[in-house]
Image 1: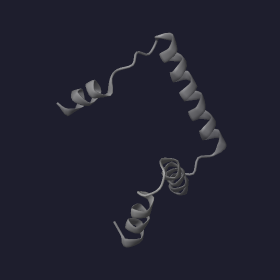
Image 2: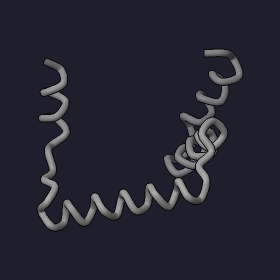
Image 3: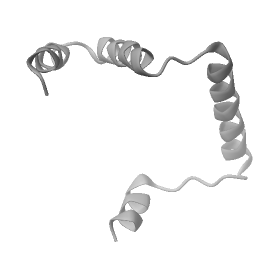
Image 4: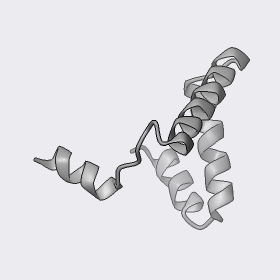
Length: 72
């Protein structure tokens, strides 16, 4: 990691979580700009997944079980 990135990382570690998330979002936008269409598709996907979870169509699996499976 270069010195500039390391300096930003050290500063960001002292910030509130909300500010860290805002920085992350801004940085991600620099390397992967999402147009309105892509953002709308992700919103629709999230809504579809939430509906499937709420209806019982898509069961939830505990993260520790998933991670244990993939550690094998």
